[in-house]
Length: 120
Image 1 (cartoon, one colour):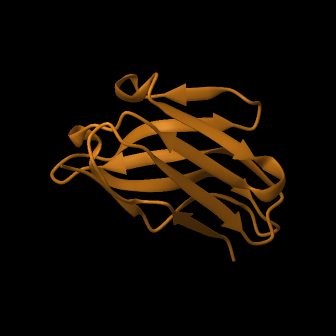
Image 2: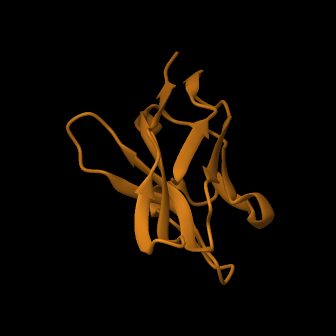
Image 3: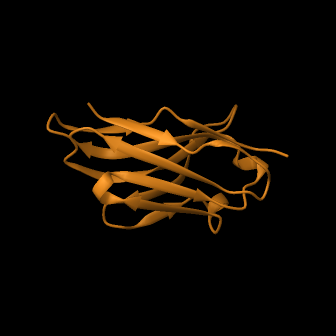
């Protein structure tokens, strides 16, 4: 059974930094892409940053230059370093693994979400 376990959220002041981690566990054959999405109250879930198996990255315009996604492929783990945080970054951040292949088949998986609050 595949699980995505997130950690690293919390409360931080504007201008501060946080680092999120997401580890995929289970019998995993391959993962096409891993990344982070977020959902603020009253808003739709949106892409923050993703990392494909080929090594390419994709960032939302609102986080470019402030957030950095990285990965440890051997550990099926993805990280999100968030710097210069703003109040508008406040949201629940969700880890996503797209086209994750196990011996049972292929599917998309989500973590349980971790709260990030930017406030003074």
